[in-house]
Amino acid sequence: MHRRPDAAGGFSAIALIFLVGLIGGIVLNFALPLPIWPSLWIRPIGLAPLIAAIWLFTSARRAFRRHLTALMPWTPSTSLVEEGPYSFSRNPIYLAFIMFYLGLAFLFDSLYVLGMMVVILVLFDRFQIPREERYLQQKFGAEYGNYMSRVRRWV
Image 1 (cartoon, one colour):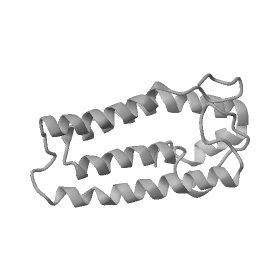
Image 2 (cartoon, one colour; image 1 turned 135 degrees about the vertical axis):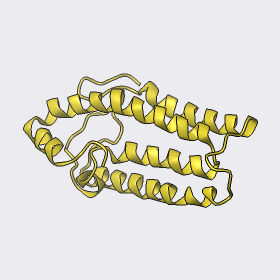
Image 3 (cartoon, rainbow, N blue to C red; image 1 turned 30 degrees about the horizontal axis):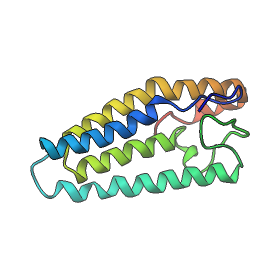
Image 4 (cartoon, one colour; image 1 turned 120 degrees about the vertical axis):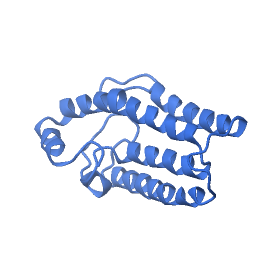
C-alpha cells in the first residue's frame, strides 16, 4: 500500500513484524520450549487477555464505524474518535494486539512469544504511533491536542 497524501501512513512493516514475531515465537516454542512458568495453570490464564483483546478490538472498530472514518492508517481519517475504548486509550487497537500476544504467550506457555510481545510493544510505541499522532495533530489540530491531554497513549 502506498501512503495517500491525507493519511497517517502506508502499510507498516510493523504489521508484518507483528505476525512474523508471533508465528516465529510459537514455532520456536514448539522446537525448543522455553516456558514462562512450568505449570499447566499458566495456560488458562491466557484466556482473560485474549477475551479482553477481542472485546477491545471489536469495540474500537465499532467506534470507527459509528464515526464513518477509516480504520486503516493508509486511508484518510474523516473524524476524531474519542468514544468507547478511545475514551481511556488513544490506541486501543494496538493495545488489543499486545493483549492478544500476552494471551497467546500464556496459552502456549512461551517466553519467546512474551519476549516478542515486548519487541512489538516498543516498535509500535516508538515508530508507528508517533507517525499516526503527527498525522492526527496536523489533521485535527487543537481538537487532537486536547484529546491527547485527556487520554493516555496506552491506558
